[in-house]
Length: 351
Image (cartoon, rainbow, N blue to C red; front, side, top):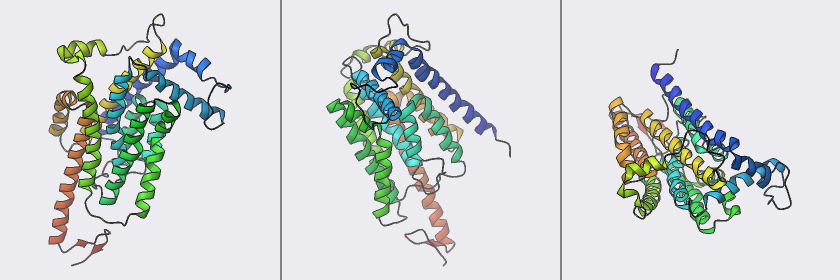
């Protein structure tokens, strides 16, 4: 069967966002003089005695060196506030993949471990759109089951213990080794979820309350940082002018003035713009109607300004989970009227 117009438009949209990400993030980094200097001198292909060896294997050590050094640049005093704002809000994007990859009827393509390692290695702005496209296309006709109680609890533990707490430690310590530990959070989340689901008794009870707690944790952390930074800056005096001044350029940074700090800040801006936009469009793609999708888009500017982009995204996923629970509850009532019941483990029983 040929793909419909909605599928084709979804592919075109997310592919375009991803292409923009590869140009503005990978393209700008590798073509910029500061980026080339980092590759040549700070993290060379052949490890040096001064370079910390995490695995004692050349390629992984160079990759980890680049990730750690890049974040150390973003921890500079001039850019630290925005780095904190983006990373705390990033929890909303992380939990989206956790939730969609934990559903009972998920596609095998929606693997949060694989997806997480890809966007952590190559950058959120370029790979999150493609990852979301995979989740959306793989979820056609699926991903309609709300989280069960054990699944939601595993998501709650994964986002709090394997993301929020390591993020706090990273910002408190500002140490390259802690940064590398944080970079591997998809692995810690995967291990924590697998362990918890292995020991937790199975039940088909609704996990909406725990899902709200998990998403609420990302909303609170994102909003607190957003509110604190927003009200301690002059942005509120002229928000539109501040946004225009902040908006990164599409062209390569001028090599005469570019530093590794300004280049890193430039890349992080595009990371935030493109990855947040992709997640918003993903929420729209899961909407039941066009009017619902347009409502999400219409609320996005105000919701992002008042709550923070991350908190607004998480609120959309609370709504999605609530809607799926409402549908599951209605279906359960219809089945009970028809004499079909399910026990706590999901096994079907006749009347």
